[in-house]
Length: 525
Figure (tube, rainbow, N blue to C red):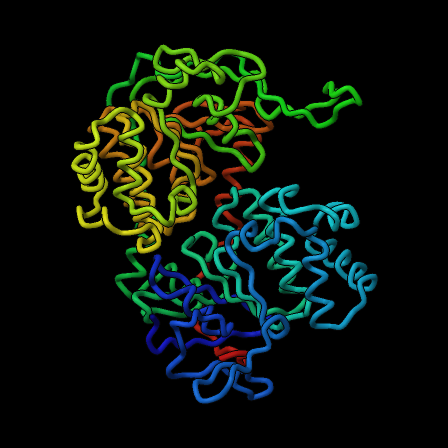
C-alpha cells in the first residue's frame, strides 16, 4: 500500500525509487503501469502525461496508459519474464508485430537492429537462441530490447541488475545511460542498492511504509540525508570487516587438482571431440570454522565449484574430501554422509520451497528423511524456526505469506535440520535489500558461532564478502586467480581481474553537492 506518493519524471533523466522490501517501490511502479493485481486499485491521485495533458491513470476514468508504447518495463529476473520455449528474437518481434503492425520479415530486421543497439554479439545468431542459451547479462539485454521495441518515452526498471555480478551490472548500467542519451528516455529506476543510485540517478525518491520520506537531487540526498530513515539506509553500507579471532588449523574441505568439463561437441559415435572446462585444476583447503568468500563474474565457475564440493555434480578429474569423507558422486554411502555434513542454501528461497506445503511440514520432512522419530519432528521444527528468528505459529503458514527475508530464514532453518558442519551459500542474499541482507548475515554469523559452522559464501557482492568472510577467493575462467585475507585482497589486489572487479564496484560517478536547480517541465507527474 502507498499513501500520497508524488514525484515527477523528466525526459532524459533518471529518477531512482529506493527503500527496503515492503516500502512500496514495486507497488508504485505497478500503479503507474496499470498492472496492479485485482485486489489492488488506485483510489486517489493521477499519473499525468504532461506533453499531452492526458491522465494515464485516473480513478474516475478507464486506464489510459499506453503500455508497451508510452511505458515499458524491465523486471528483475529475465528468466522468469522470458518464454523458455520461444526463441528470444521472436519474443521481441512480437511487440513490433502487435503494436506496429509489422510483418514477420520486417519485424526480424528491426529486432536485429535492436539487438545490435543493446550490444548483443552477432544479432542474427542471437535472434534464434533460446533464453537458456544466454547468460544472465545477455538475457537482461534481451529484456531491454523488448522494452525498447515500441519506442517508449518512459522506461521503468525494477531491480534490473540486482542478481548480476559487478562487472555485468556495470555494463548494463552503462548501456542504460547510453540508450537514455540516444533516445531521450525518462527512466524510473527501482533499487535498494545505493551504489547503483549514485552511478545512474539524477534524482532520488526514498520510500518507507508506502510514503515518501525524502526526495531531491541524488548528490543532496546521498551526501546530506535529512531523514533518519535515509541516514539508516546509508549507514548500513558501512559494514565492519570480519576477522578471525583464532586462525583455524583443521581442514573441513580438501580439494586437489579438480576439473569439471562439459562436452560441447560429439562425433557420430557419441565421443566428445570438444569440451568446455568450467573448473580447471583447482586446489583448495577450507579450514573448520572459516568463512570463505568465493567471488567472480557470471560463468567464472563459482557455483560449479560449490556443487562439486557437495558432490552434486561428478568430478572430471581430481579428488575432494569433506570432513574426512571422500566426495564420490555415485557412491551412496559417501553421499549419505555428505548430506548430513554439508548443506546448500540457494539464492531464491521461494523456488526452494514447496508453495503448497506449510513450512513446518517442509522442515519436518527433512528431519524424517534423516532418521528423526516422527513424534519428535514437530518440536524440533519449531525450535529451528525460533533459532532463525521466526515464531512457532509460523509453522502453520505457507511460503507465499512470508517476505523474501523471512523465506530465506526458513530455508536456513531447513538446512540446519540435519545439524550440518558446513554450509555453502550460493548468492543467498543477492536479491534482498540492504537492511534485510544485513539481518540475514547477522543471523548466519550468530548461528555459525553457536554451531561452529564452516561457510563457503558464493557471491558477486564484494561489500557482503568484506563484512562476512575472513578469506576471499577470486575466480576467473574456472581458476582461482587470487586468494588471501579478505582485507588484503580488497585493499591490495594483486591480480588484474581482482582490480577490475573492485573498479566496477567503486563505480565512476563522484557526487558533488550542488544547489537544487529548477527542473524543466516534467514528462510525467
